[in-house]
Length: 118
Length: 111
Image 1 (tube, rainbow over the protein chains, first blue to last red):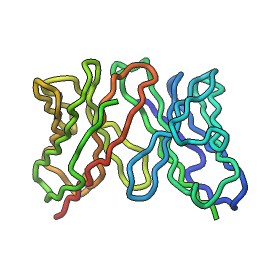
Image 2 (tube, one colour):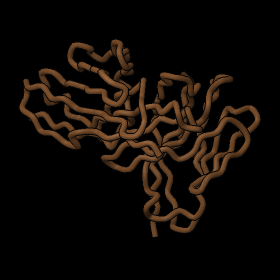
Image 3 (cartoon, helix red, strand yellow):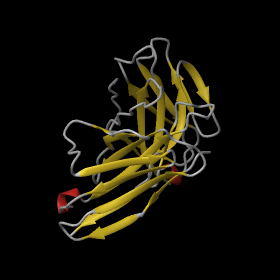
Image 4 (cartoon, chains in turn green, cyan):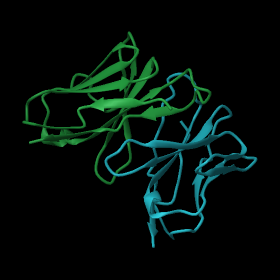
């Protein structure tokens, strides 16, 4: 099946610094990727939809200037958390659609990135 | 986007069949029903997807009644390793399909 990777798997940073998280589709091309955030004991919350070659679409309440998304190629989307604060500490997960699969409606999720802001 | 309602938690024992029902009263004509499994600190994993009637794969079955306002995920003979959160989602499956995760069902399997 299609594989989505994330890097890093975990990161610890100081308050005020920026952190970049990468999401890659390893064996397929993804024109659309999604970024989610998940707090402990809670469900996944969609943050934004990342479209290759165009601006990301952010969900209501998500600050686009704080969570910068770049989808520069068909296999890579990045999420940069700028000026991170402790409240940004969370589990960030990306997903990608593989339009080439027989189950074209399936999203493949990455393993997630645990961000801890001190 | 259709909203889904699931039980918050369920308990079972190894070897038993587990059925998790999801309500989606506002499901649209184009919507598919998809179930994901998530272990702690991991991304969700696709389990099964269907549109109507019954779908079966190597790990689960999905039962969808004619009105499609609900669906039931059936896990045959669960084991301890099936302890996870199970999410039911509906979406039209088209390009750029946004998925809205509900609360999910925490399944706990004991010996």
